[in-house]
Length: 113
Ligand SMILES: [Zn+2]
Image (cartoon, rainbow, N blue to C red; front, side, top):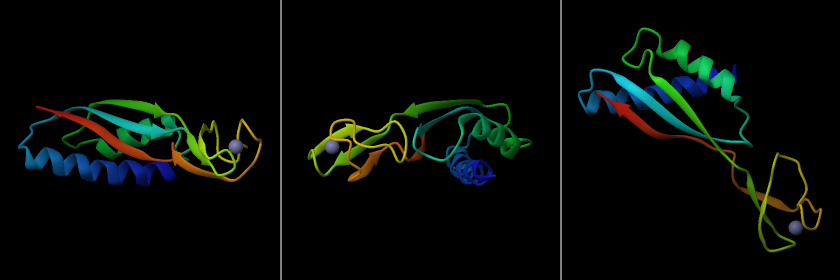
């Protein structure tokens, strides 16, 4: 499962942050997940629970913030909304698009105590 490896690399960052700050427990984690990324929110939440089981982050609240998709249209020469990968430009119906937002996943914040 793709989400499992994402959750693992995410946990490495969380664990390192917690260790550097002498944290006793990770309370919550906020993650930004673009709608164009291949990770499913439900699967990612499940993977996070599995990966953090028995760790400093066990039971931490896990919030996913969905980022909308955006692309640069070379024909219109402007940024247009992109609801999913492979969709055409909503203005010119062209496919000369370069994704500029929405295919990423990153940790937005980590709350520790
Ligand atoms: Zn266009």
